[in-house]
View 1 (cartoon, helix red, strand yellow):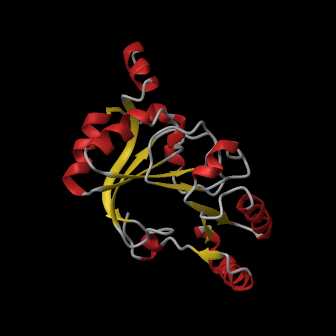
View 2 (cartoon, one colour):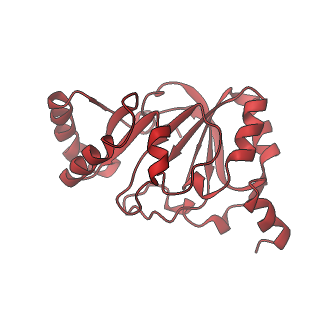
Length: 210
């Protein structure tokens, strides 16, 4: 159980519920193939039934960790960090991104956009979910729109969301992993007919890396 002091520090973004951190290859989207340090934070109430990290949902089972310690570990490995979850925007991202910026580390975030935007980011990957739609203000911040495609109806949702981002935002369709064999031919055909979209794959899973 967290102490009152811990809760106050978490609210200020000085402690974060750290599920895991690791140095690996970015497997998805525009930066796929690039080395990066990943920080996975606990806490998410978006509730995607196909989520492959449901253990991230409950923030209380992940240790409150000092952002100074997190940044020290990042510096040992990489000058690019990807903060994901869970849903990282459940927490105040201003303190950790300020510290990362101070250490000349490029900051990337992967978010559903369902919470208030915070932090200073070099790259924002927005991945909207039907269960809990993004807040309006985040669409203009997105460098990359990554839509997870589980069924045909998700393509309709993807088109709706694509009309909300800026013209410079890159558009990706990514098959949900458990449905990839069924949905991949549909995505390929759709992208060929609608070339504003690109295909994103979870290449790290094919390579059997984190």
